[in-house]
Length: 251
Length: 317
Image 1 (cartoon, helix red, strand yellow):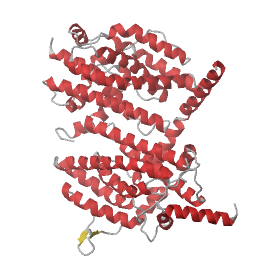
Image 2 (spheres, chains in turn green, purple):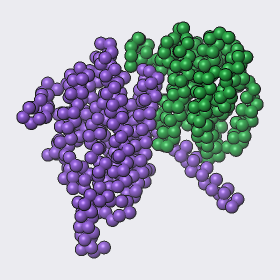
Image 3 (cartoon, rainbow over the protein chains, first blue to last red):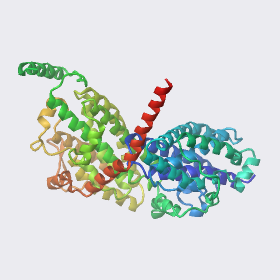
Image 4 (cartoon, each protein chain N blue to C red):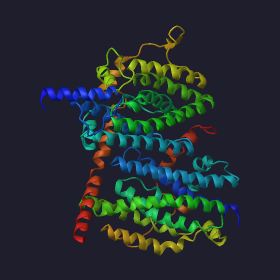
């Protein structure tokens, strides 16, 4: 087993938290009411905290990057491994909730399985994360039901969001080479096996929210291999702004 | 109630305040006491909420993950302060929606300091150090104010503000121990935030219309000028530690008084900003109003869903 595979595997998980945390950070102060504003900021904070744990671990044995911040801020666009779903914009609150829920169900399953990894550090992180993620899933699932089965307008907006985001869901279960290697080593989770369970759970909730479950076709992917959507460069230009403008400084 | 009875109630009320008893929401209180508290507490809540905007402006660009997490946590704290202050204010018989309405129409004010822009990362440090520092001086006495819900909310608010202030100072210290560019960024932020921070204590005592009544109700324990002096005396030595210069050529230690003397505050600027003509008044209000308006369909959906659920439960039950 090469350390590169472990490194890439960790980043594959961590980059999702970073980019979704960054997206949610854009919303702070602009929520539909104070309670949701606080909740979304809190989720963002959890995700950034998780990111730090993963990157600190990755930096501890990386030859290229020495700190969590190097990993977060100094990579090129093609080197980020997050799925396309988490980089999708905050088009409206329905998209924010839809993106969150579609990710949270997957994230919860992943953390649940990752608790059985042979890697002690990842196991410790997963044990901490699952408590946070279980709250995220409850929050996004509850709001999905409210918006789906709320007013006609909210139903239509929520359906629009689900339809728009659906094509990014299959990527969650595609395996990269590093994931394959880590699964063989007893460290990684075989996410491809979670797929049917995922769609069953999501469909159940969409039905409860009186929403149509889109057909499972016309999926798109690329993020896990570093080919992102056109949104991604803009995310990085904000995320990396300070580190790029003032290199090698302590903040 | 007859005039005599009201007078009698007022006497009992004033005696309770004099004995430092807490006034609770269901207790009788003079209408003016109620209105003054609605004005002040809602203004305080609005300041927390509007204050999220200039700081939130740097969340996506925070220079390290640690700073990003701390800033998220801080802005979340401000939202929490807003939440319990709105709740405290609601006990006086006004709804949160009514308070928002007053904010959005300009009837209710918020702290003018948030009408200044955060243009560099150092502004996040300066806000924590100076603005939260000034807020603490304003707010610590309120932990003992006469209205119970406000006093209790302020105990928690002050604890968190004190943490924010230390965090802000630590950002400044890191910048001042850093490169020449970082130090220049810190000095520039101090230059821009110093005078607006002094204005946070409000007009001079001679000009302040609310001070006398507020002192009587223990809604204020010290005058604006006393608090401002306390802030300056406390902050100048901190600037010395940072190695930064306070942008006031008239600032000097007065041995005889045991205080710093300081230069004239530009009150024209203060009133311009209070009247809505500061650098960001329009942007702040636009952001609040559009968050509220864009959120209407979400709040409506939540209400509609709750009603549907209740109907279902009733049928089932």
